[in-house]
Amino acid sequence: MNIRTEHIKQLTAGLSPVEALKVLADAFAGQIVFSTSFGWEDQVITHMIFANNIPIKVFTLETGRLFPETYYVWNRTLEMYGKGIEAYFPNADKVQQMVSAKGPNSFYESVDNRKECCNIRKIEPLKRALAGNQCWITGIRAEQSANRHDMENVEWDEGNNLVKFHPIFDWDLDQVKQYIRENNVPYNTLHDRGFPSIGCAPCTRAVQPGEDFRAGRWWWEDQSKKECGLHSTDAAHEEVEPLVTKGVS
Image 1: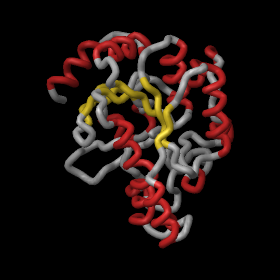
Image 2: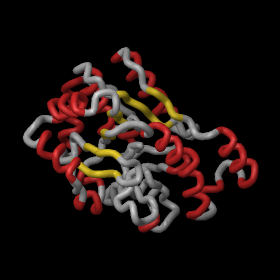
Image 3: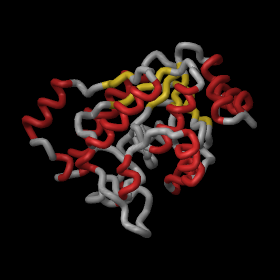
Image 4: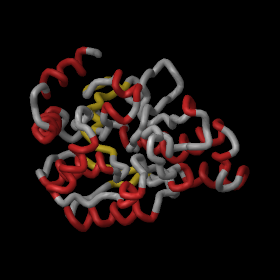
């Protein structure tokens, strides 16, 4: 943890998620963003930001392969709060080249193909969304995967050169669901059908009882390869997303 992240950790220590978001919005005025993939956790944070008029820009990655249910909750969120959510699309030429050369579902054929698709549809748009900002808010929670227990609620993202803050990092899933119920927060109904983590439609399935939280993401791959790069845990290694969630998703 560098000096900046240590300062932010001290600045937000003991604060509620909403209080911390307000403090960070002031500390990083005009240079703080929140990435949503419209899952449970992200909807909680979106509500915190919009309901309290916290000046944090909310954005999402529109990969072009999202579930219909995701688009529904996206639109429902816009209707409920009357606030904008900026969409970042992949480079159309790169998508066209990939699909023309390898077909629409090349990601099933190899890990390299899947990573290529993730890079085009998610990683590059994320880089654009984060460019020029100093703080990135995410919906990561510690219990979402084993390697997230090694993380902290404040991190330094070397690859994107900014501070990352996870306001509900210590919440469990019951707390997330309770907040959604109590505040009437719109959420993705796929969660009710066994989808704890929701990404692109071709790459996400429901999780069976007893399966790992991440079992539904890229289920055809070996567990150790199930990462896409949105949340790198080590800038010295290949981009790795511990979840996910996110999230972006």
